[in-house]
Length: 137
Length: 137
DNA sequence: TTATCAAATAAGAATTATTCTTATTTAACA
DNA sequence: TGTTAAATAAGAATAATTCTTATTTGATAA
Ligand SMILES: [Mn+2]
Ligand SMILES: [Mn+2]
Ligand SMILES: [Zn+2]
Ligand SMILES: [Zn+2]
Image 1 (cartoon, each protein chain N blue to C red):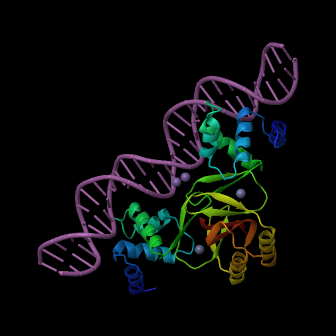
Image 2: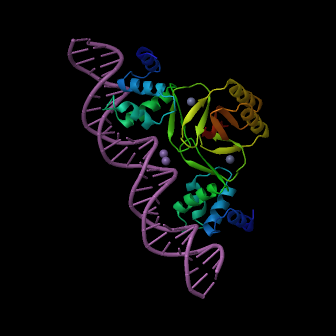
Image 3: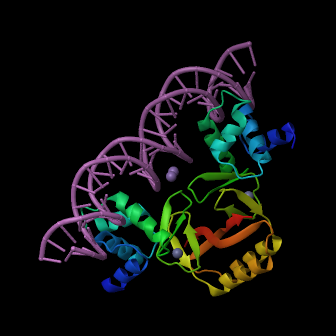
């Protein structure tokens, strides 16, 4: 993922291109876990000593608003950010609080079929969140 | 659900029976939504003016510890409590933040089968959380 | 029934992830 | 290169939850 590619991602979504936005997007994209705002901040602050945590929050949130990234709450009430935007599930480890992606087409298809076949008359489903909770071994 | 029945639930789980525990369990059980600790507190405080919010938190948590109730995080990072302990899914309204139960045996069976058929070698699944996010109409 | 004591509660302080406010800086564009 | 709206840094404010401690209470046994 080149600097130019990231720059285009950001400008295409209608946001000004800034150093902070580049660094934050890059850090999130390279993270294999699903970092919190604070973890992103820790990742980048040694190389960017003047960056502020408030900016990390605000920037991540504008990325969410423009559809560049996703966010969701974890079991501890902390926001987690995800550079992957297409439908996928998560494995949550109750011990380490790590969250790993679980991509499985069959599961996505099963759920999609289930929703199509069970239209609820008083609720419009927009997205489905599936979290497998347990512990890694 | 009689007072005696609630009392037995509480004492059978190894907890002392107290007025606060009775009132809190009763309030949660009567709630059709999935109330927050603060909502439970609001529900009961006019009839129990000396009860404290800290007690509501602590009591709900000991109910969770003994398996009497469940709890989970909502999308806003607020704990929600659920008197229903068997497996079921939830509908989350993005507008009102209401959470409704969605009980569907077919879905539970589909998910159960999926897990049995896809044992992950480095992760032990203990529970599955399925939330349909959208809006009520 | 009454005394005992571990457990539960009330009150308020502390914690912490997140949001808000405001002065300063900067990217985009004319 | 100057203008300006938007972005940022810094720190204060917020709010759900947890923690601390003094007081009260439920369960048990004398
Ligand atoms: Mn919070
Ligand atoms: Mn919190
Ligand atoms: Zn993910
Ligand atoms: Zn429920």
